[in-house]
Image (cartoon, rainbow, N blue to C red):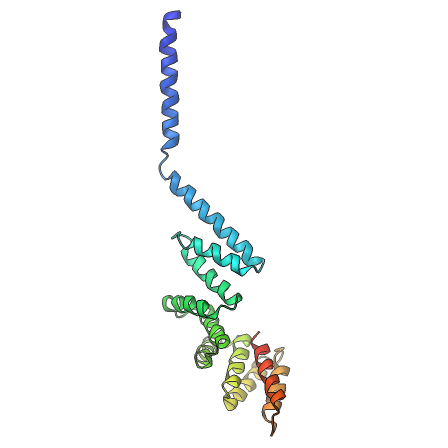
Length: 208
């Protein structure tokens, strides 16, 4: 019985070594671990975004751009984070790139229109809202924003035409009263500096 003991011990050692070797060299294991890590980063970014801590969200979305599987989602949310953080230059850069890749996407176009409006590029904002209103004629929100931009651009006749369309198609729009008040002030013969300031404030409220 004793003469078989070394063989049994040796066999056990070989078997143990083989198991360890297999565990250390599982195909694709390292890639899976890395992908899981990036998913954790993305979840952290999403949490910060939901908490409206956009600065923190931006830092984690940037890390996720290193992962090709999360790149598109991270890039889009990075752009939204810049918008929410009022970083119009970086927001415009990202959404302009997204628009080049998907120029028929209304969500991207409306985001760009809003970014252009907030950054002061009213000509571009008008262009995009005009396209969106044609593509989405059943949306009151886009039409309201388009009217606001037309007023900012002092294209009052076209704005009044679009306003008539808004009242006809969307009589329950909550923005109708604000727009009517704006036109009343626009049509007044004289506008004091205070009135002009109120006009600007009301126009911004329509876009919100």
